Image (cartoon, rainbow, N blue to C red):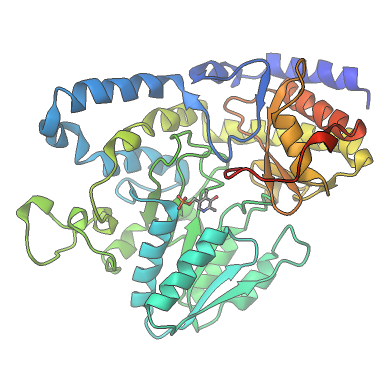
Length: 426
Ligand SMILES: *Cc1c(COP(=O)(O)O)cnc(C)c1O
C-alpha cells in the first residue's frame, strides 16, 4: 500500500466524518499534537472549562452552603442518571462516588457478605493490577477466608470465554473482570460469562474503566450485577474525577454497604447515631463527594451522548482498521508485533503494539526534534505501546501521521538518544 494513497484516503474519511465537528468541542488540541492517550486521560471539553469557572464563582463563592440544597446534594445520583443510558442501565442504578478501586472494594465487600458460604473470587490474568490489590486487601480484611483465582490467558492477549465459564462453580462468590482489558484491549463476552455466573449462583462485578464511552455497554441486557468505572478516560471528566458504581435494581435491597458513612444514610442531616442505609443506590456512598470535580464530569458525558455511542463505535472500528492496515505496511516490517486482537468484535478502542524498544520509542514520540509532530500514546510495561482511539476528537489523518512517525523513529533509530529511565507518571 502506497503511503500517499493512504493519506488521501484518510483525508477523504475525515471530510466525510459526521463526528469530525466534535473535535472543536475540546480545548488544547492542535495540529502539531496528535493525542492517542484519550483512553488514559481524556482532553478538556471547552464547556467544562467554563462550567468549572461558573461553579466556583457562582455556586461556591456566592451560593455558599445554600448550594448543597440547590444543586450539590443530588449531584452524584443526577449524574448517575445521565450516564445510565451509556452503560445500558436504568435511572437509579448508577451513582458517582470515590475512585474505581474504592468502589470495587465496597461492592466486593457487600457481595462477599451476601455470599458468605462461598470462598472463591474469580478474575483473569489480564486485569488491572489495582483490581487485584483491591480484592487481595479485602480478603485480608475479612480474615483470609477467601481466595482470588485467576483464569490465565493462553496467548497474552485474550482469555477464552470457555475458560472463564468453566472456572465458575458453586464455590464462586464473585466473578470480577474488566469489560475491556487495559493492556491488550481484549473485550470479554460478558453476556455469556454473566449467564454462567447467574446459573452457578455467583455475582458479577465488572470494571468498565476502559469501555465506558468507547464501546456500547448493556449492563442490564448482559445480566451484570454490579459494575464500577472511571470518568477521566473516555468520559473526559478530568484528572482524578470521581468514579461511578452500578448495582442492578433488584440487588440494591439485598446488598448491605460494608463501608458505611453518613452520605450513604437515608438522611445525613438527621445525624442518627445508628447507620440506616438509604433505600437507593445512594447507600453505597460513604462520605462527602468532591463536588467541584464531580460537576466537571457532565459536559464530557453530554458530548458522548450527543455524538451517539453506536456512531462512535462505528468510527472507532473504522479507525482501528486503518491503524491495523498501517501496522501491516509500516510497523510490522520494523519489528513491531500486534499486542491486541485483530477481530474488532473482541476488542475495545485501543490497540497495543509490542516492541523491545517500546519505552524509548514512546519517549521519542512525545519529545520529538523540532519540525516533527508531538505524538502522545502511552507505554505499558514491559513492551507495549498503546494507541488509544478516542473517535470523539481523533481524526483519520492523524492516525496516518502518527504511524508514519513511529515508523520513522524506528527506521532511523531516533530513539537511540533517549535513556531507559522512567518518569513518575506515564
Ligand atoms: C484507570 C483504571 C482504574 C482507575 O482506578 P482508580 O481507583 O480510579 O484510580 C481502575 N481500573 C481500570 C481497569 C482502569 O483502567
